[in-house]
Amino acid sequence: MSVTIQQVEYIKKAKIESISTIKTKGYIKGVFYPKNQKELIVTYTYLIKNKLPHILIGNGSNLLFSKKSKKIIGISTKRMKKRIFTKKNILYANAPTTLTQCFKICLENNLSGFEELATIPGTIGGAIKVNAGCFNKNIFSIIEEIKIFKNGKIETITKNNINYEYRKTNLKNCLILSAKFKLQYSNKKLILDKYKECLLIRSQKQPQGFSVGSVFKNPIDYGLSAGYLIESCNLKGYKYKKAQISNKHANFIINNGNATFKQVQHLIKLCKKRVKKNFNIDLECEIEIV
Ligand SMILES: Cc1cc2nc3c(=O)[nH]c(=O)nc-3n(C[C@H](O)[C@H](O)[C@H](O)COP(=O)(O)OP(=O)(O)OC[C@H]3O[C@@H](n4cnc5c(N)ncnc54)[C@H](O)[C@@H]3O)c2cc1C
Image (cartoon, rainbow, N blue to C red; front, side, top):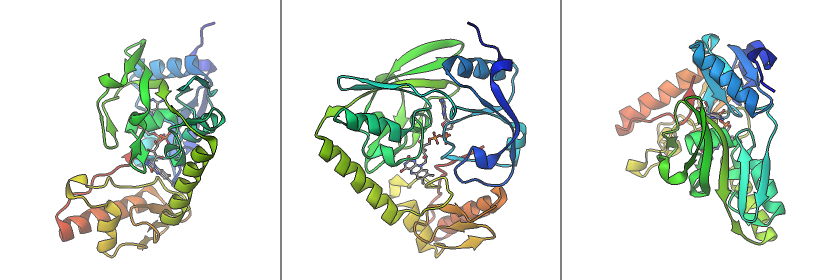
């Protein structure tokens, strides 16, 4: 049965706090909530055909919405049905599946590969788009191939045909639909222990609270972390109204309640300015400003 755009759930003037983990104040023009792949493709095609500015949203854990979002329409994959299954040591997952859900099914099947990545609060779609990673592992290290929707067609692309580097891919102007991962058989206890170890390290080093994770990429050419550089500029814990550079990890900006985009942006600019002045290094945002 064919699906029309009128059938897709749409929320007009949606609150940013419902679509971004930093939960800043304000509104986006509207958000479509497709329930399945058909609805997702219909929505995406409709927005492109009508030249309506739009943004795909997974868990919104890497997205900071600016004033411009009042003119942008979101397509959130959050309410889509998750499809996830294994065949031997291969895992298939669709875009809205979270990394933690992937880990859980891997654990049930004694498969290793998602222990580190599962501690990132993102979906498969978002994680692939930005090549998410942690603990010296990135999502492309376990990907075999992905399915995308581009120029009106569904296509499968193998990993060799995708350009990816540190927190960056060439997957532009497309919908990521699903992915196939190749994993290693292992021992359930080892898999679980590794995951718990990663969670513990995160809880020791990174703050709780509303954020979009690391704000800046680590300037790898200099072999230094963005957190170290910001801390060295004495900005750790610095507050601007309701936004704060975390006092636990200087590369995180926390919304202490009702922070606005402008307040967060003020801190981003301040970090960039000080790091440039003190180290002559240009910090590049890891988060995406919409
Ligand atoms: C507490 C915390 C810790 C974090 N730690 C890490 C970390 O260790 N490592 C790391 O890499 N990141 C980290 N992040 C950032 C973030 O979680 C990752 O970038 C994550 O992969 C984003 O996934 P998402 O589903 O939230 O994507 P979103 O933030 O919703 O979107 C990210 C990008 O993907 C696009 N997108 C989303 N879905 C699709 C789709 N189906 N098709 C095409 N494009 C799509 C969006 O348009 C956007 O460009 C952290 C964030 C938080 C809040």
